[in-house]
Length: 220
Image 1: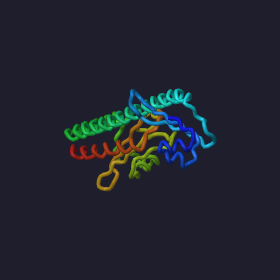
Image 2: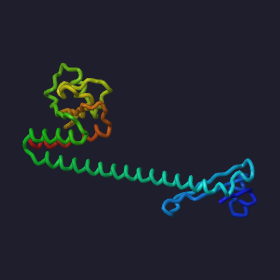
Image 3: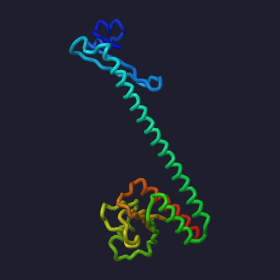
Image 4: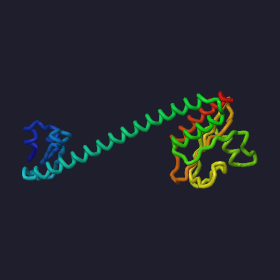
């Protein structure tokens, strides 16, 4: 659709264009597979005849390319949403299965093994260790700081991990596990990759750890 002046806009019932002093305008549909997905609108307040009917073919080609780009972007967003939903479902299933395995055992060693394995699977992590509060050296400043935690801890980049995680660890986190308002253990996870962990991952580790502590108390 090509409009050559406000009078023509009024005649077509396009009162908003006429009221804004539009002197030339062009409108073309954006279609995809014969389906209307949008409209491309161009206007000018400078002069009449800026847009001509001979230019509509080029605009239609352009709008169809834009429509293709929009559909591709929407498809990509949908795929990301599906992947996110799948990850959340898998996370919930892994979490549920881990709780079931830990709760089913009366062997503390098996409970700890299941707990650390689950953390390694969820993050992922190259190493996961559950350290009882009573086993940490009291004269180690890092140990003392971790035992004072009340929320999961994400260290600053480059901060050395606790020695218990071993060598080669470049990224780590710590989740304090509490029972009866005191920290009874700290769940550590580390990776050889330099990519840092996120707050969401730290919260997942803390949630798994709390379930593990309950199962460990039951086993003891």
